[in-house]
Image (cartoon, rainbow, N blue to C red; front, side, top):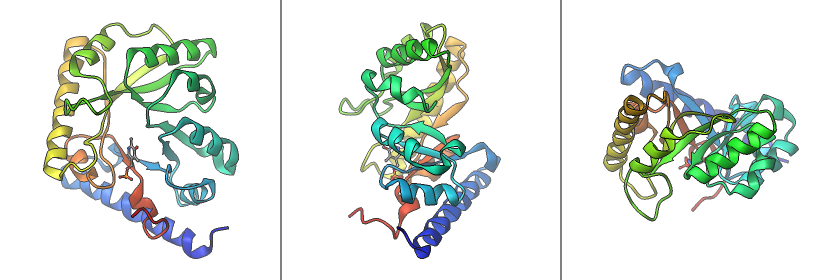
Length: 237
Ligand SMILES: *Cc1c(COP(=O)(O)O)cnc(C)c1O
């Protein structure tokens, strides 16, 4: 069991993150309600995740499908949670994952997009997805190149998925100036492919604990915040 001090700490962390995110939006002339905080709960168990939900965070991100569905089954407040799948997804995990109707941020191939579309169609569902782009061009990173992105948008599945926008990661160890450039490039790429393909891509999922300000300045509509929310509660050193 976690104690009252831990609950209070999570609530304080959540409130200060929301305040900073809203402040960052206001600072660059954006409506604070245009930026959603996705609480990335991958570092902690169902109990600490529940404390985060109790503090007011109802959009949760997990990077592994097994952990997402375990928590979705274990947690009492599960109905009030909107799940976000933010890590690499394999086709053999799709069927079970879709029960929890996640927004999938990490579509990094046409194959996985088709697998989700087929399964969702069979289940009579429609799943919102984001296409993950590899803006740095670094081959060790996941995500679609700009050419692959255009190819995917030009031959979207007819049912089962709705593409809502793009997701990008600045990458581990990137300094904030580089991160900012990557986020701006992602936004510019979005603007270009939206024009050239006619597919509307209003959502931009970018920015994490260390670089969410830069992401918000560049137009992020979803920031994925993990470690900042669990400061003082878990040892990540
Ligand atoms: C872990 C993770 C995050 C959160 O990162 P923090 O630096 O802990 O805020 C965001 N996005 C993805 C895809 C992740 O895997």
